[in-house]
Image (cartoon, rainbow, N blue to C red):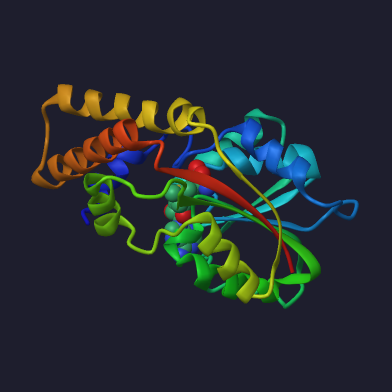
Length: 245
Ligand SMILES: C[S@@+](CC[C@H](N)C(=O)[O-])C[C@H]1O[C@@H](n2cnc3c(N)ncnc32)[C@H](O)[C@@H]1O
């Protein structure tokens, strides 16, 4: 992967994965009650749209990512939203956190647990939650049986570990969580703040004509992902999994 080319496509976008403020709020509404002033961690926060909502709704949040430019973007938007003192930005590896066991009431992660592997992320993060602590993650998931061959082959190459909701529920239970609730994000959560801005960025970069081989490859891969999401979107979706330790 040509990271420079990847981040040329992905810098300064509203989000780095499907989601919406409304979906974040809906997931928060479905959680069991949290203590007053909960200790909240947002992992793989990226540019941090969901971190802003978490801070607004819950009081404060620690937002973790290892890509510094995303954290600077969040810093600016937190200040603009008047939330600068409620969001602690931390550059670090969400797979190697050193917080003491039981440090958090809620761990949140939108569209990022797949980078560790769903089961592995659940296992790594569980000790950081206090007993009865809550975990909310969104994860790309098969939502219809018998997907056509083209979309199966696409995900076999991109994310072969992608599971069904039922498989993920079992994985979560096996990892020591009670699954409290799940819901599928609407298709608008893919397009409005993620695929449409990415698609616009691809067109701008193509129009600029200044393409290195690495950038050409990332643009072609991005167009392919957008096309698959457009034509086969009913077969897979982002699913919120709300769990209790
Ligand atoms: C698909 S993006 C989702 C970002 C954000 N939650 C959103 O929905 O817009 C995944 C994020 O995880 C971050 N990331 C990947 N591996 C990481 C790791 N090991 N530690 C911390 N952040 C990581 C990436 O930099 C990226 O910002």
